[in-house]
Amino acid sequence: MDGFSERFAQRKDEFEWLFMELYEDREALGRFETIMASFSVSRPAALKDLDKEREGKAWYLERRMLGVTMYTDLFAGNLKGLAAKVPYLKEMGVTYLHLMPLLKMPKEGSDGGYAVEDFSMVEPKFGTNGDLERLSGKLREAGISLCLDLVMNHTASTHAWAMRAKAGEKEYQDRYLVYPDRTIPDAFERTVPEVFPSTAPGNFIWDGTMRKWVFSSFYPTQWDLNYRNPVVFMEMLSSMFRLANLGVEVFRIDAVPYIWKELGTNCRNLPQVHTIVRLVRLALESVCPSVILKGEVVMAPKELAAYFGTPEKPECHLLYNVSTMVGLWNALASQDATLLKAQTEDILSLPPSAAWLNYLRCHDDIGWGLDEAKERSLGIDPLEHKKFLYHFFSGDYPGSYACGEQYNYDPVSQDARSCGTAASLCGIEQALEEKDEGKLKKALARMEMLYAVVYALKGFPMLSSGDEIAQLNDYSYKDDLLRKEDSRNVHRSPYDWDNAKKRKKKGAVQQIIWDALQNLRKVRSESPVFDGDASVTTWDAHNRHAFAIRRTKGKNEMLFVSNFSDGSETVRFDYYMGLYKDRLTGRIVEPGKGFPIKNHEYLFLEKMK
Ligand code: GLC
Image: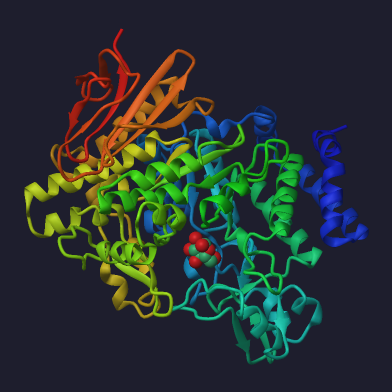
């Protein structure tokens, strides 16, 4: 038996059971098994070697892991340009590169590539499939895993299927959710929330050519797929295998909670979504076991962790730690780490082979999805607090240091999200504009500390490209007709290579942030307490402004502490008797007795021998 047959044989019962539960179609099942077998045959030898090396190993839990996410064109023009920048990525210490969507996309309304016109072809302005394959090879040699999106929920309205649907072909209309009149759309609208209430209201759009209503959760150029149709499932998985065979090692399954629709529900996180994710996992383990799944699940904590599945039946290998990301910005603005601590505790127990991807910023907005029950229990009014947050990070709250923009304000619910780069949100932009050294120092300390927490959390850190050189907001999108409606563009700007050079200029903002991140990387890589199987818990610092994490592995132990207050605080740790030394500064403290910690200071403490 070859590798595939053996691997699939071990998973066949469960795979067939789940497939039949969804589709009740034996013929389709047979066809899909043939598809999987053929992709395993055409898998290049180098990737089969990688499969062998990684099979059964949670390679993404190694402490060397450091991610970065970026747009190919903004960073390096195109894929060839990006290949030439691999040495720079190595200098940064990156081991995981997530490139924003780069498959063929419409000229207008591509939603940053999340409207895909052809899943089998690289967007010509970025290069060719050959360029992608060469890049993935080069990255692999450099120890960097390539992550790409699989935009599962929808295709572009100009995708060949949508064009044929518009032309009246029923077979293709059946791949989407199309309705002749408003009866069903109106019934859905009663229970389905809107994703973009101000930039793309409603969940349906009218297609004049087809004379039908189409389910479109996101922008009108993105038509939701019908996963009740097994052909959709099979075709999307084929696209995934094709990309895996070009060297993609991680798939970010975009907007996955939305893929199954059911009348009378909110059409989010339905049980069938989990069945599909589990099927995808089993299929990947059979065809290309070195390849892993990262779920893009921007949901409340209890829905979020469900996408890891269970230890027996795992789903995603990686998930964005969206809950802590929001918790961090909230703690920064409110100078209070109580909620951050409580929310972090909720997500610490996960299946052993699962990992959080910790981050501060990505290409999207910050949605203020805090745990409302917890907020209430702390005496916080969730809506009023949310308003404070989005005003604070737009810089229009008295005393705010942040430069940012609001995103998708909904006048009915008064919900809004926030956009901006980490540096601008932390106050670096304002301080530079005002040429205020004191403010700049504080702003830099904020950004450093937030990243220190990101590096200390359970899981592995991911940077948003540009953060390592403290890139600021770019407001020029407002002059661009195609981009001005989407304020996420304020943090999507060309990489500033002149500023990147300043990473070596002593005292420059870029050098301070770059070196701080390098030091954090060093701390992670030098100690086994950052291994994937280390134990990680929060710890009480006896101070609501402080956030502390305890990491242990075997005899090794480290206590991380950070201060979210604008002033100096005192922290104290029970059970930590004796002298401890900060790994970065060498400062010696006695945690059991208490010690002062400056505004936005952080320490990685180890017991002195
Ligand atoms: C995800 C992407 C976002 C995009 C949406 C629709 O949330 O991160 O940028 O707009 O999916 O595909």
